[in-house]
Image 1 (cartoon, rainbow over the protein chains, first blue to last red):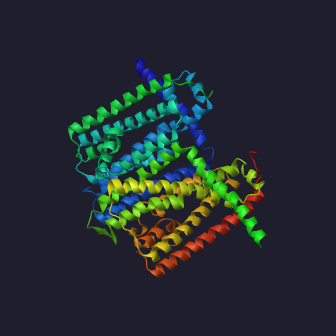
Image 2: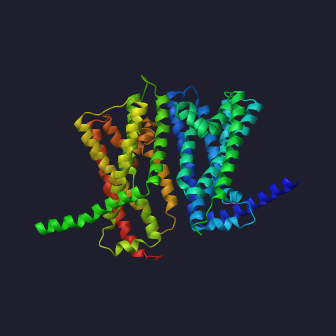
Image 3: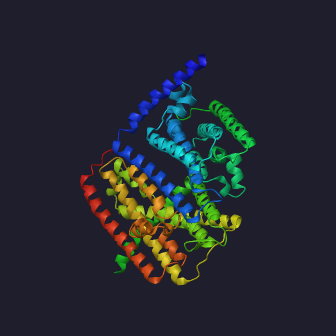
Length: 266
Length: 275
C-alpha cells in the first residue's frame, strides 16, 4: 500500500515538473516547431534511406524491408522514449559546475529521481507516437507474429528502456566524479545508433562489444528479433538478466559516486 | 610596392596566429576532442559495416563495386574533416550575447577571423581523420580504390576547396539569424539534419531515384561531399566535372553575396544587446 502511495506521488511530481519544463520549451514556439520538424525530417529521411537500400538490394543479410524497418523503428522508439523521460541528464553538468546540484540535494525529493525525470522533453512525444504507429504497421506487415511474441517484444522494449535508464545513471555518476557528462552521453547515443540496423551486420569484436559491454544489441536488436521469432528462450532470459544487472550496478555506482561528491563548485 | 606587400604579410600574420590559437585551444580540451573523434569513428563504422554487407565482394550497385562504395564511405570521413569541420556555429551566439561588439572594435576582419578559426579546426580534424583511417586500414583491411590519375586528383582537390567555401558561407549565413532572433540553434538543427542526408555522407547521392537526384544536382549540399568524392572515384567525365564546378562556383558566389548583404543589414539593426 505504502509503495502504491509512493508511486502515485512520484507520478504526480513527474507530471508537475514536466508541465513546468514544457512551458519553458514553448517560450519560443518558432524554435519548438523547428526542433519538431528537424526530428521529423530525420525520422522520415532515414526511413527513406532504408527504403532506397533495400529496394536496390532486395534484402540486407536476409532481412526483408519490413524487418529492417522494425529494427529501425524499435531503435527510434527506445531512443525517443529515453530522450523524452531522461532529457534532464543533458543539463546535469551545468548543475554540478554552477553548484545547483547542492540545491537539489537539500530538496525533499530523491535526487536521482529529480536528475533523471526532472526535465521531460515534450517535443519528443510526436516521434514516440509516430514510432508506436509504425511499430503496429510494421508488425502487421511482417505477419505471422503470435500474441506471445508480441508480449515478449513489449517486455524486451521495456528491458531496453531499463538499459537506457541504467546508462543515464552511469553518465550521472561519472558526471559527479569527473564533471564530464556531455561527451559520455553523446558517445552512448552514437553507440545506440548502431542499433538502427541489426547488430548481425557488425564484425567481431565490435559485435561483442555492443552485445555484452554496451548492450545496444540487447536494447534494440533483441526485441525486434523476438517479434520475428528469431530469438531463443535462453537469449530472452539473458536479455532480462543483463537489463536488471545493468540497472542494479548503475544504481550501486551512483551511490558510490554520490558519497564522493565534494561540492567543490558551490 | 614592397612596403605594401610587407604590410599585407604583417596583417595576415594575425590570422595565422588565430589558426595556431584554435589548434592550441583544441589541444587544451583534448579529452573532449578525442571523444568527438571517437564518436565520428563510430558513426563511420556503422555506415561502413552496413555497406560491407549490402555489397558483398563481386556484387555491384548502380556502378558501385564494393571497393568503390567503401572508398566513398571512408572518403566521406576525410572530406567531413576538410569541409564540414567548422567553428562558425558560434557566430549566432556571439551576436546574441553581444560579443560581436568586441570584434567590431578590433582591427580584425570578422570573416577572415572565422575562416582562420575554421582552418585551425580543420587541420586538427584532418590529422585525426588520417590516423583513424590508417587504423581502420590496418585493422579491417578494406578493399580500397586508389586514384592514380593526376587529372582526377587535381579536380578533386579543386572541388574540395570550393566545397569548403560553400560550407563556410552557409554556416556563416545561418549564424546571422542571430541579428534578428535568439533562436539560432533550431534552424541549425534542421540544417544539420538535411546535411546528413543531402550531402551524401550515408550513401552516394546517385543511387537515389533519378528525378530526386536531378533536382539535387542544383542544390549546394550535393557539392559538399558527394561531388568531390565522385571526381576522386573517376566516375565523372570532363563535361560533368566542368558543369559541377560551375554550379559549385555559382553557390560560392551566390551565398557569399547573400552573406555580405545580410551582414550589412544585420549590422544596421544590431544593438549589442547583452553587453
